[in-house]
Length: 181
Image (cartoon, rainbow, N blue to C red):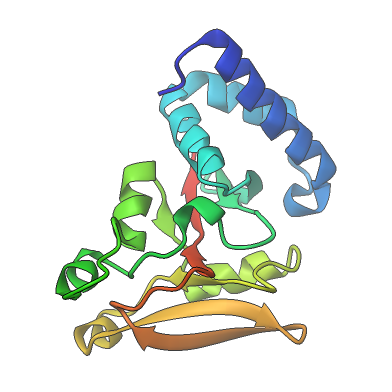
């Protein structure tokens, strides 16, 4: 997807600058190690480009099992991923005003997974995210089977988890994702 060397260089410069400005998110991790991993996993570059292009502002937020964890760190829910139902089933169930995609479908297309509620809360320990917006999170099967879906936001200095009908969508609700490389 990253079509040329110039585009790749620009993306890597953006990622490196963001990494340097937000050391609290990845204490103990050095950019050269991240860059080396990205250079040897070119498919990750495409995923990061799609995250960036949809407003996610991806950054490293830690390491797990010897892999770097990238997550959407935009202050608000990524603007290019808002106004989506939770999943394809919810989107297809709408009789009118059906959105073009859903959070689950878009995440799969980008190459990321929606954050779980626990991951969302961990992200909030690194900064104040979604103070004006909200983000769909992975929904337990039993809740989804009943037609619902979960979303989270941060208000009044606290992280809240809510429920909504999975077919609902709002201009201020999107989703955050993550992946490992």
